[in-house]
Image (cartoon, rainbow, N blue to C red; front, side):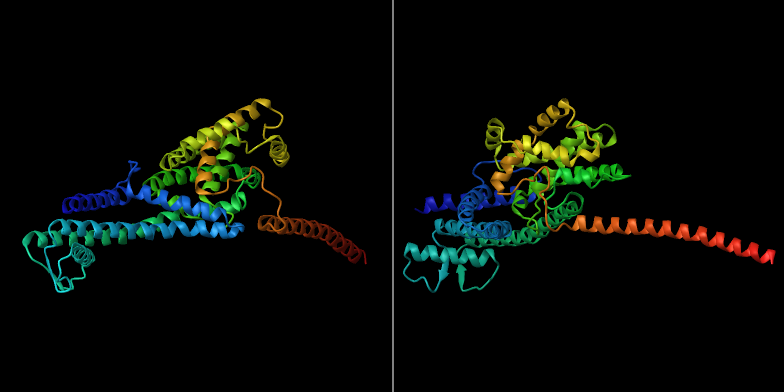
Length: 407
């Protein structure tokens, strides 16, 4: 029994240390089917999804999903600490419980194991109570090693959490800014429509360049810390997945329908955003689901949706509806990223954006645009009236002056 406890204890200790190294320190995608973190998320995420899908209220489901990310972080840290305590406790047990414990007078193996676990817990968290003392040098050395492991574990936790939340906050800034640029939830059509003004192409190119960098940062941070993918945005109509798919949709439209600098930047942004989307799919092992979505031919833009798209883009002078080749290119380029987006959305339980925004009773963008247009019309009317009165006033003044001279 004690030999089995030694093997199991060493397996727990080295397994936690390796998993913590791969999850926190290693700056690349961790590999391995039997990693503690991966098994933990398989054992917690899927049961949570089954529970949430039974809730009739969508807001309640979203609330459950939003809690999972931060809660899973705390549970994972607690799991690591528990496995370390049990692992070192098993090693102490394999050494014959080399401790002097006033509460363990009978020497039964259950009592011995209880003492070993207690010593392991107080040593890992460096409590230093001194009520149980080691009886030989090997136990003392092992307690020093466990104390050092506990200090390192606490230091990793202290440094890990701020890094996660900094990456999360940085991600959400661009997602929140897209609300004013592409609507809420964002759509490619709205993004192009809101940049259809004089000088808007320059702003659109700058926006796409920003999202190219954003996609590269997501590729770097979320591959290293896949836990961030479970973190939801603060607003119900926003998510990092819907944002990146909306940008990919806009890039697909620009690549297939326009020429010039905007199309060139769209190609760069499309390549980086698609790369991030596919690599995140590899992290969550949804490649099989992506292939199934590609084979079944689930279409986000059916014939009716395409007609609606053409109607909304009619004033933007895009060569889409009148050019069959553009439609074929758009369909082909959508197949490069939509199956992967569907697979991630199905796994993370996030909604993908529409191609055309649904009409809303209250739209802050339209309200502001209406006020702006009203101000412009009023200014033009006042300018025209002032010019008219000014001419008449000048003529009247000259006429009075002529009469004065005549008199």
